[in-house]
Image (cartoon, rainbow, N blue to C red):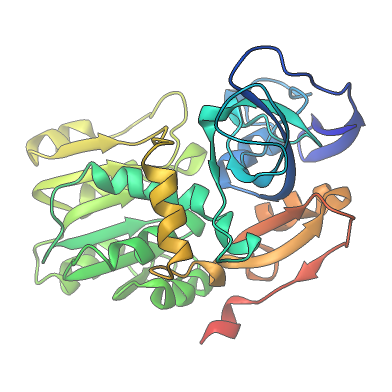
Length: 334
């Protein structure tokens, strides 16, 4: 069977590997049907030093996946069940792999696969928002408007903030942010974000700031500057091993609260996300912009990394390879 391996920075290949086997009780043999690239997959692809030298381990990197249960040694699923499964350590770029049944939830058939796969990133956002107090009548600023930042915009519409301020350097992404729920947008390529948020809030700045960038481009200092006295900072973006030159003293004197967020609850957050999508409470489908067959995994990663044609969420189809299928451009949702 095939698996993916990043052989050098910016290069991913499909290689032959042995078939996996169930080894302990409570496992499923999972066969992906559809995957979706995430920003946390890119450091592996780019060969960032924080993740170790290339070649990367076989199977890196993919973790947003839906598919079918082939075999099971557990009690939760039966062969043929369709599930959302999250592999450990993002090791999901396999034709089939073994994973604990506790890391899978059933798919809801009321929505198509390209919608229900987004329950994975939505679940991570809902988990993060559970950490926060009531947001009713508050001002929330979200730094970074990649797919996760825009999912925050969509989810926050249900939380009652007075303002949802989306901040990014790309105007094209901010146009999509408004459609996803942002009340205001700030393009850092054109405007000073601190002064812009100060203007939007009559000098108060933001009650809550969400860092949705992470990795080597993390924006911690900007988030500190945007935060009001006594405010709350939610650091969602995956940080590098160390945050150098972060102005922690400024954050300290703002009497701020800091939350981080990782590893949602499979019994609560992902099922709730699936429910929101299935019931039509939230529509994340405008974020799906590109689709590739798994045999074009190199092009899929390049498109996602380079934001080609306004790419947001890039799907990887594990079925009979059908090549690139451009679904919708952000401009199509006006």
